[in-house]
Length: 111
Image 1 (tube, rainbow, N blue to C red):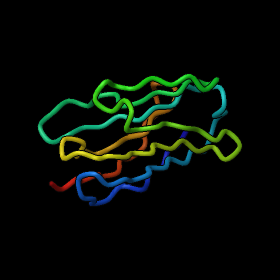
Image 2 (cartoon, rainbow, N blue to C red):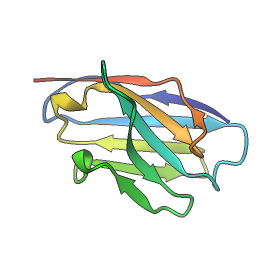
Image 3 (cartoon, one colour):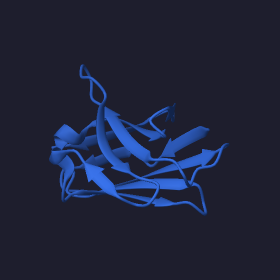
């Protein structure tokens, strides 16, 4: 499975961004998909996970602000990020099946 993340950028606090991740390769619809992030000097952490049947889980710090979704027909996974905070600044990575990683996309939130 190959993953290509996009949609990062610079945004002011309170703003929104939508990350996208395109997948190719093996069967996508049966896999759990996720978004992770790594801030400078910190370990990579899970942000959101969506199961093959659409059940979602979020880290507490983004609940109510971020929404993960998937489109199996298009082999895509998305992360809608609203009410962004400076502490959301990080490189965001998409993941498939807890095994395959995309290259990361940088999100910078200015105060």
